[in-house]
Image 1 (cartoon, rainbow over the protein chains, first blue to last red):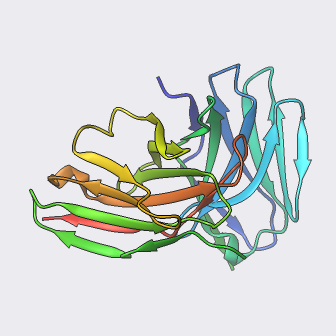
Image 2: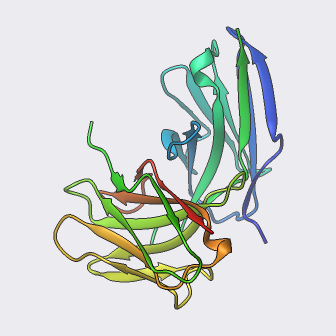
Amino acid sequence: GESVGLHLPTLSVQEGDNSIINCAYSNSASDYFIWYKQESGKGPQFIIDIRSNMDKRQGQRVTVLLNKTVKHLSLQIAATQPGDSAVYFCAELLGSNYKLTFGKGTLLTVNP
Amino acid sequence: EPEVTQTPSHQVTQMGQEVILRCVPISNHLYFYWYRQILGQKVEFLVSFYNNEISEKSEIFDDQFSVERPDGSNFTLKIRSTKLEDSAMYFCASGETGGYGYTFGSGTRLTVV
């Protein structure tokens, strides 16, 4: 079965609002997660990562939260801008060969 | 900022033909990967490559696929006899070390007709 998946396929927000994108994972042994942003016609771009020994990690305007109890991951984007419009994927790094398993993706649309 | 470079950006090929997708990973990286993304779907792992050999491959990566690192800079994916269902974006990625997120290229859009 699929190890990583997203709750919402699309999310539409107003410019300046905060965005929250959610992700569930099923492998309780997973210990490293990454959020990627993919703009149209481009490859996945690393945003932020988190290891399982952390609950929260902050970057510039982005925060990732990890709830290991319910195997849930979220990406928060503060003051969303039109340039944030993209598909966002969570991914789980698995195994000694560091294979990434991606979720289905959430399309974020930021309305001006 | 260092980039993973892929060529061509778009390739159209006839069913049954062989294609080679090319990648130049970031120069000091040791781990190399190919992923594919069928239009509108999630990114799927194909193969990982380390120390000049395949370290893991998915069920998708059957006998028609092969990878090579022919010199110190290039990393190629060959599809021997393309099928219509091979149409997808193919992404190369490289990582400096294991256990961390790695850098993706912009992809090659393969269209099999």
